[in-house]
Length: 228
Ligand SMILES: *Cc1c(COP(=O)(O)O)cnc(C)c1O
Image (tube, rainbow, N blue to C red; front, side, top):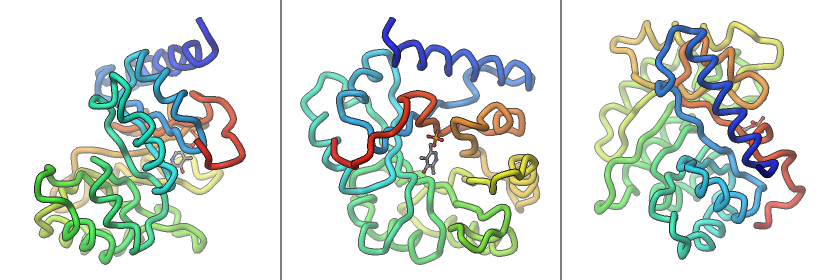
């Protein structure tokens, strides 16, 4: 077993252990491999082990890897998630080249993604990013603004609002539970929660996460450049 295979198998086991500890079904949590600043070859190696969901933070870097992988046998099976900050001028490329977007943090971005989602593709699945700890340096809708943002997203025809995404502040151990409660108190709770990274995914799963976004613990330390 090589190092990537060993880390992949160890993370899969910890996810299963965390779900069982929380009295949840093992397949109620999806592992998303965060491949930012990792080469296309590493993605290809993981697809060969059965991993299908990959997330990227930078549009140009993601498109370059998608092009490199287009001719590999598993290309059609890869599901691409966008998890990075979104500038307005990048929404068209995101709407056309990803299936899921986790970092929708303001009305204008939701509106543009809906307008620009190509007609031949199913609606784009989106999470609203919530600034759960009200940090001034962090993106996301504040808990107070969330109900209005949910209502807006649910009116837009070419996106499908599936859940909430958070990146908690350091030392904010109950942020995942607060996010789950925030969701439960919406007029109608959303089905999915994108919470948990390499350092904190067991706690996120305990609080109800359905999608964990794991980079370093899977691929090892990120390479310095965004080149693939
Ligand atoms: C980089 C990143 C991750 C993965 O972080 P790791 O600590 O490497 O697992 C998850 N979510 C977002 C939004 C990220 O930017």
